[in-house]
Image 1 (tube, one colour):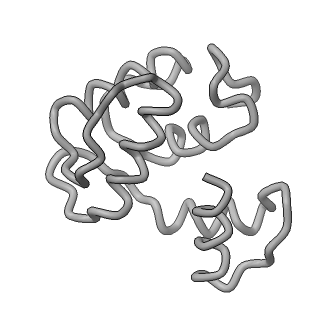
Image 2 (cartoon, one colour):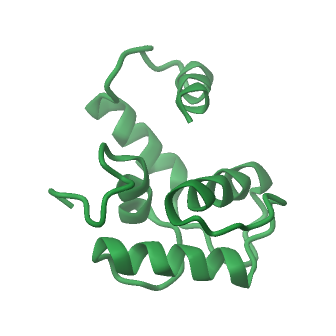
Length: 110
């Protein structure tokens, strides 16, 4: 995921610093929106699927199709993190997935 974040920063002309800066969080927030079933952003959906495979051990095919298995993995992740479990990968879910300690049961400060 580190390489993906660096590529994102380069693509959006953001400073290549670690950790993620407030500026980058705001830029990502503007770009992410909400992703759910029927979303056509194949690359972003693949990223979500990969992330859920890592964080939820979801065993989802990384095919870029936001189907029922992807939605269920996102919903399970949201429940684990105490986020409204609607199965839609929005800003709060994004932040919980990429925050330090994302693999932990809950993420402090969300």
